Image 1: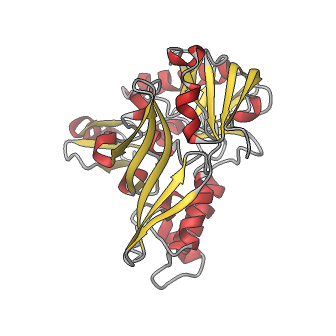
Image 2 (image 1 turned 120 degrees about the vertical axis):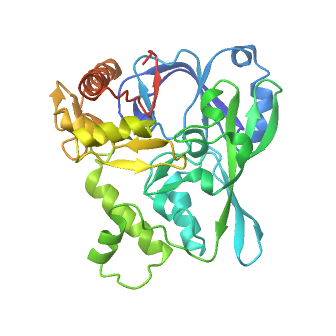
Length: 347
């Protein structure tokens, strides 16, 4: 049996973040079994120190070295817990790659995650950020989240309401030093009801020659086509996907902006008093798409995506992101915030 964990001192993290920026950690802990966590956190170096949970490294920017230990959960089991014929309950370990998990569910006749295909990262990171795309958020499919609680040194199981999910937010995002997500359980359906209201999916399906009611796998394929067309591949050029969250404003402020800028995309939210604006449109309107400062730049395909053209540092990318945010606020009076976690510096 493999060792339950491995400790690596002064570990390089360049290849463990999709921006590909240089960074180190004083200690990297690769965990191969969740039941090893109580023993690990019995060590003094991990009891009270700040730590960083590292999944696929696709939702963070190293603007400096990690200040403390970095934990990488490499547990990768997928288990069918229950199946009543209409729905199934699936447990996936934190280390499972998200897109691989989506494909696994589709291959087993389950729907609910197809709109979230090709999102980089791991299952464990999904509830922390409450990942979402093309009209669906992962919280809609989460049954419960299992996590290791550093305060009690035990495991907790939190249902969806206890996770305090919100737009790109959760309980875990506000308790990064307390909870380590170890597994997620999803309730998925065997009866597919497509979610096609998000702009682009229906037209992409049409371009694929699909005129009848699509299958879940076909919706996933359409989403993958759109993402590959719009977003640069981190394997080709360093990036972390969408860098800025879409800002949410009071409806009155959003309507005033829309009067002044009729082309501005404005979306309704579940709260009738709030509206969501397109951060990409705001950034593009400020002239940032395709901009480059040395090797730190903005994608020419999508204004939301910061890219590393080769040798940019995290500090250089952060400086560019700050300039972008300042320009949007100066022109539109709208505050935009980063979606990835910034490590080694304050936003």
